[in-house]
Image 1: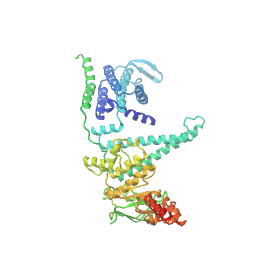
Image 2 (image 1 turned 60 degrees about the horizontal axis):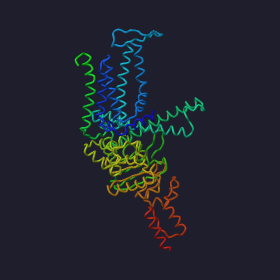
Image 3 (image 1 turned 135 degrees about the vertical axis):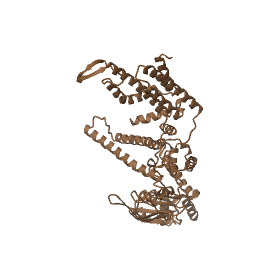
Image 4 (image 1 turned 45 degrees about the vertical axis):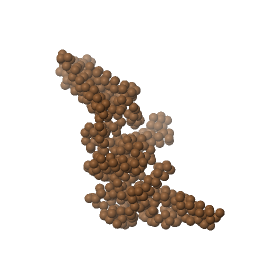
Length: 275
Length: 277
């Protein structure tokens, strides 16, 4: 998991048109697509809208010159969280339909409804589109640029400072975790080494996790002391330099917003026969 | 009036562990002060009293003649900048620029001044090129410089460095020596640093405090401290190699004047060689 952190970071340091865009532009487009997707009503209208957004995503991913493996790896990591919620929907009724037709009866009084399957499919599609854009955003934008971008877009100072410290120390603990793993490996300890007794491996891992917690606590104490030494107080905030938006970024933003807003509107108008 | 003064300073850690015992310390203006001592001698504990992180159990700490109070604590922390031993404790922002700007931002300065201070601090420690980098991509030496720049940006009059050479390579140590000397020479700052690397001390210190088990056991210049090998060995330290060699040669009857820095020693060796040739 920790290695994935460094893997994601590595992708953000690549060079492409998308990587070079201002973080603010990428954040706005990403959130515009998510809002548009979420706002699209739970109906078959979702399919053409999601298809267009998927195409838009594909174009951006190609422009970002990233490997499909990067996307697949990250999707596989995130998918279980959403899949669980989506799978549950198959067995329950939801407020978007009035009539439910059972298509399978299961033990313990469980039923699978046709409408629930449709709802779960729409939910899955919405989830995939939203997650894909989040993956695109985080694979093409350095995490510190994301934070600065969010700060420039008006994220409150309390959040930028806290998130900034979190970003910094995620990497500090990432390296700490690596060092602990290396120290264990140096002394021939492997958590999956079946030659070692199971209880012994469990105990050693528990000690390691405990040590990491204690070190985190101590690190927190030391960092807070260092912050006080540099005048930390209620008014403290992260320094974010002013940065003008280039015309190229503005043009890209206009195109991105046009796609995000026009796609659901056009398909909706066509569904009611106005286009 | 001294910039920093401690009077009979005693500090006891929770669990009744003595951290400092009756410490009297003076930091005058534009001085380079080394606090030497073995591990656990109380150097870091003493430093944490200089900007009010620790409060004395008894005795007092005076900054420009004034005790540290709740009202003047921000002013004191602006006046006395402390650089910790491990830069990862001190660098907590996502980029170098943001980290160096943290102190000036807290001082309530306007953006232009903050920008100017950041640029200047990065220039002083020679890391302008690292401005947009993230801290976890830096080497240990570079992180140390970023930590120092973060303090320099607050423009303190006293810079306190806790074990500044820990983890640095020889070039890093040389750069640091030059940097400490330039702060004192060019900016008139008082620099206080702790170390147990005694060979470094003659190059960068005018005044030396020797600490052992929370007490100051000796104070003086290089001549006064390094002429007492018994004292140094009793506190788990040693005389630097150059004065040790010269002292040994003198014991063997070689006519050579004592020297502590490399430049002085080379001069004295050449003079002794010419005399004996």
